[in-house]
Amino acid sequence: MADVRVTYDAEADAAYLYFADPRVDTRVARMYPCDPVQVEGMINLDFDETSRLVGIEVLAAKSKLPGYLLEMAERIDRSSDPS
Image: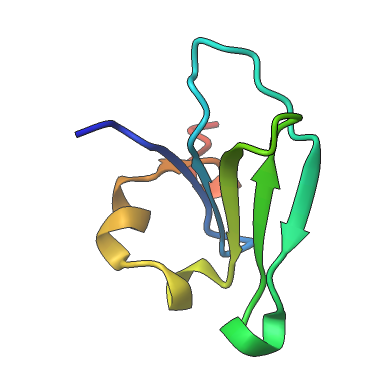
């Protein structure tokens, strides 16, 4: 099973799931926002220049993603800052 990098900012309640190879410098060429009314929140799909899906941003992540995924995610919010 492939590992997927997940980051989570608890203050913003936003998560990002990375699908791009971490050994390759991948840039987002375009973003497709999912309809917030249809998904009851905002989910953005990021694509590279070849239209390959490279990541998903999930806002209101606590209500959209399983808890175990957010618990294992790399924390990028200030509450994870040891200083």
